[in-house]
Length: 388
Image 1 (cartoon, rainbow, N blue to C red):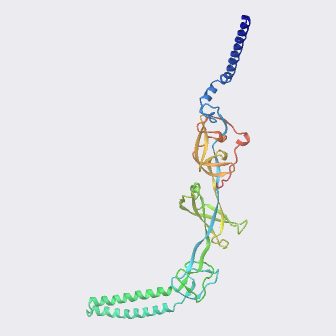
Image 2: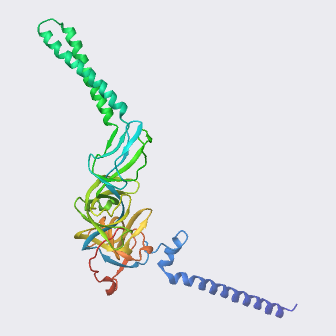
Image 3: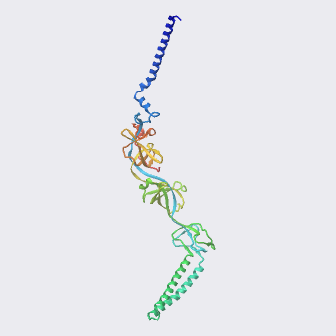
């Protein structure tokens, strides 16, 4: 091959190598350009362990939230609960001994006075036993009196007079026992009230504990209901209540709280309250289901918007803004009204709580607070609270 042709081929090969090297250098410069333009942020991103940092985290942009201050407002306590009516006094009328029913002295549903005879059982045997005991006592009484006279003259010894006196005392006890057995055959009302249905007939054999009828004093009704433990401090004897029954639509029954149970149920975190309702008309019956309304005068309470609450695993939290950062705070809540809730522990008036954007926050995140729109931030008029 001539030398001229070799020189041409070598020149073409060198030119191709130079073009390829230039193209490769330009490609590498293009790849590095976006990373260089990103600056320090790209460097931090590359140093991470698999993705961008959490929203509002250290080194990230602040999270925009809407927040308002916790405020003190006047609020009336109003609780609604469900209760069960009970008689002021209530018993099952039963017999103490096994015997036959001789006479029934009451009518079903009759109002009876305290001490009124309700039922007489067969008392022939009891009366006979009493007569025998009284005869023995009469004889021993006469003998005891004569013995006392003889003892003063030293005719009887100490042992003899003691034996006679013991017989006398024993016969006295037998009379008392016989009278008690006879009284057990007469069943009386232990208090004034209304008898229920008759469950025996004349000639029926009744045994101890067998129910003959019921007796209820319904001149007053005990109304038992439960309230959450957060209201215990606000409920006390004398607080007025109103109760309503589905049996009397549109009618309410006024009463007062008489007592609050000394223990809180550890399972339901509620406490039993008892109120007394006058029932002269007899409309309320034991066992009736009633809706209870309690209300007391207004007081100053700490309120926050309801949307600020963050429930987690049975607890309630809020995010408080402090020094430009989000602080997660556990709180205790109390009564509610539309759009607001009382905070009984965990916050103080004036602290800034996040109402919108809580789902984007983490503990210690940087935040940028935006005030709510004027219509939403306007103070709501104080109202009545309801049970949560």
